[in-house]
Image 1 (tube, rainbow, N blue to C red):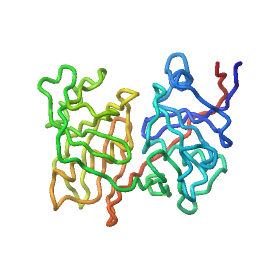
Image 2: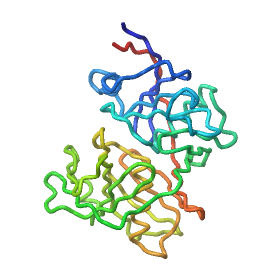
Image 3: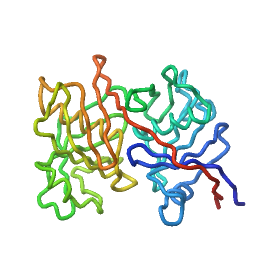
Length: 284
């Protein structure tokens, strides 16, 4: 039987999502339904789905202490994802605009990567992504038409990333990301792959700067990836050594985001969030 569901379309620096409110956990979206909603030709179109559900009514929300709301994030192909840095800011914007939560004070939001604290910032919203891990061993990354594979650093910020350094903006622009990059060894759950070019100079007034493009697992190339932005800044910071700054600006095709590392070892991501339009859709 067909079901009519209200939705809102939103984006963070061009990383776009279909937002579906399901506070009481009554809507069980199948992978096929998620993929249909995300389809840019036959559906609404988006890089993924954000289901707005109370933590108390979803199994993954059992450990979300003091987090009323849980971000059930799904990739555009219907697969489940742990976390989305742009998505959680759009999620926060939706909670605020619909009166479900106020961000006069920081709010805790449940995700499959744990509870994240979101607050206002001069860029829009900032999310504390928590601690991070940079692996010692490189992963080789090969892109279509890109010649020999390049080494990439594995960075975990609640979901997995491989960050590859490129020598110039020209090579970054010429990169063919219409096909999924090949990884060796291939992580068991896959990974998002970021390609970065450090600015010259790398640091200005104590703030580092890089440019980035990304191929997201389960989606393809996107205009932005929030956790990928954080992972990229962390990788370049690690490559730069002990004198590297804790504040970074990362430019992506969809805009600009801020990253900062705090004394407690947490990485924070800040940037805008926009709600574009709302409507209703019928699910088969």
